[in-house]
Length: 246
Image (cartoon, rainbow, N blue to C red; front, side, top):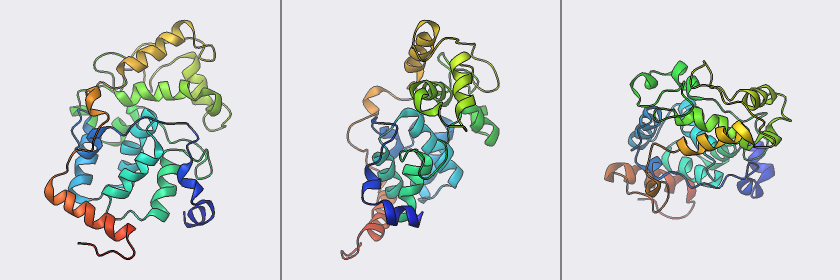
């Protein structure tokens, strides 16, 4: 981490290999989402300024990657909310390992998975309104839907990666979530035609059912007073070398 930060900055901060440009959903600052895993991880983070690294990489980070959030916005969020975040180690972890924004300098592949991974690794899915086995429909898990859309959106790049080629191939010929369910969606993603286009359109229709469009952008909501104070104090200590932190 230190080596990458030392040798690649300041240009490393501008890297965006996957050309992600969506805004960070506003509920990252409040935890108000119907997705149980994200609600739990974000609420814990805002209350304590801490989350396990798997929660950071495979919950909050995974959703941002699949959704296509601007990596600089993801970096700004991690740096702001975690009391143990110091930029020289946080930035390579976020841009490189979590968001694959450096194109593979840090990690050999994007860390992507469907909602079935979260179901296997946590108890959240049993009480969530979304079903990780469903790719489309009102109960489709956004992680699962966005996973297949992610593979199709970046097929040209990911197909060249030996660790991703099989996943891309499966997405091209089946569009089936892990563990079955949700139906099939065959087609030919390179041409984006026929049922492959139908699959992509279905992904787009159901990729953001968890929050109204008005909450996906706009000004950052105000955090609870104690949390906001804690976050400001921690951020000040990390980023200010001369100013007094109060």
